[in-house]
Length: 174
Image (cartoon, rainbow, N blue to C red):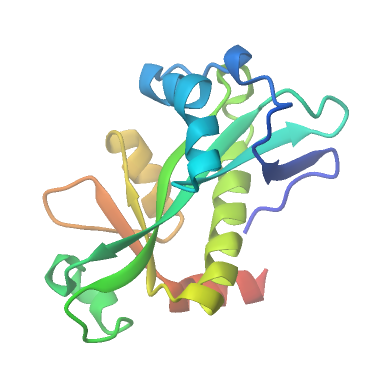
């Protein structure tokens, strides 16, 4: 799993971050950070984490969100079902958004953010319970990014899952 380079850090979003300057090339992701992320943090609707350069800590290089969700067991791919409990709903952690600034794309910063999200989700799962990580990819390219990091795609969908037991192995081996 990717770790931030020494001059980079992933921190919770705060009022001091320059959100309005962020652009990743996807209007919905930009708009969320500009207008909704601060409210979501205040309301505890989402955890929002930003990637910053420690020499310019107010500039957002990328971000992701985490929140709790649940899935019906039948929505979980067969390959992942052996890792989940047999309950009417399966507790999970949703990575709702993940974006990198347009001028920093192609530098593996998405992998750094994803690794941080997986570590935080695993730590949280030990307290509140979560059997897997879920992502709803925006398009085929995003789905391929998550699949390359071990996520399993649900049939006929852009939703992907990664069982927490696998996340635990990934985190402990890095």
